[in-house]
Image (tube, rainbow, N blue to C red; front, side, top):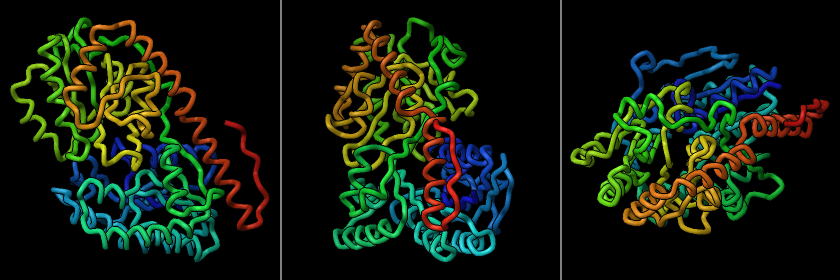
Amino acid sequence: MRILVCGINYAPDLIGVSKYNTELCEALAARGHQIRIVTAPPYYPEWKIPRPYRSLRYRQELRDGVEIMRAPIYVPANPSGARRLMHHGSFALSSAWPLLASAITWRPDVVLAVAPSLLSAPMALSAARLTGAAAWLHVQDFEIDAAFELGLLRGESARRLLLKMERVLLSGFDRVSTISPRMLRRLELKGVASDKIREVRNWVDTETIAPGPKQTAFRTALGLGPNDIVALYSGAMSNKQGLDLLVEAAVMARSSDPRIHLVLCGSGSHKSDLQRLADAAVNVHFLDLQPLERLSELLRTADVHVLPQKAQAADLVLPSKLSGMLASGRPVIVMAETGTGLASEAIDAGLLVPPGDAASLAAALVKLANDAETREKLGVAARRRATQFWDQETIISSIERELVMLRPRLTGAPERAVPAG
């Protein structure tokens, strides 16, 4: 098949949506499909384009069998609500030409748009309709809902207008997928027909990310030994995650148990603020974003993973970093209300604490620090959930089957058998 993908994030960015766009495209190319993606230069999570990619020109690459067409983009140094909108709008405009040109000259079987960025989805849909290709929209997060809930955008009139436009856009695609059961339900509430909806989880390579000894090179470099209790957060550092609470909880927990240490690994616009906040905290440590080949070792460094999420973002996004946490065989402490999608993913694999409650998080850290048996039990359950529900090979095989089923329905081409995942 020929599959044209539109997604704002792609390698060499390491985390977030980029990881899944890259791994999907490369896996489908390895299975014999022709894959072309229209994307932006790398910029996330630093919100800064590396020097080799700074250009107002379009750029073409071939990487691991995938044709990459990079469109110029505006990247704000301080991504406020209005600037984020300009950022996504610039990609919507610059990606329009390569999308339409590829549709006309390359004649894809399927056009797959990934949100974010939703603003580029209308042109992806137009490209599909122009040539009779199937159109698939994959929703990584509900950008409009999240922007208003987190205060990045304001105004009820604007919200109603944007949600109405979103509803019309969603209804135009032949397939709409998202990453969790609760987000599937939200798609239905937005008016998407149930027969169009599919769940496509953010996977993890459960062979690469696996349990192992916790005394890693990272612990040694930080001066931490096997008796220390490490709570780890690894990922983007922006002001929308509530990472300040982790620092506050770590300081509180140390007063009860001096063995407890918090390790924050990653980069982003909020990192320098966190470092200033933790300046006097002797049990808070920072690591730079690590390459993918060291991710398994990094995740094994933890005795427990911590995953904050603001209450306003509940069921609007499922943090993709959760899959790696579970696969590492370590328990998770999740900041989520009971009954939310994030809470349901952590059932039997960790502890829940209320969003925004640093004292409860500190108490959970102290509880697990002093109960090795419970940590072991929850870690085994976490690993089991990862292999059952988040396995990379199984999920990508299911995506391939969906792609193949979409093509004959619209073009009349014979369906090709795809091995079961």
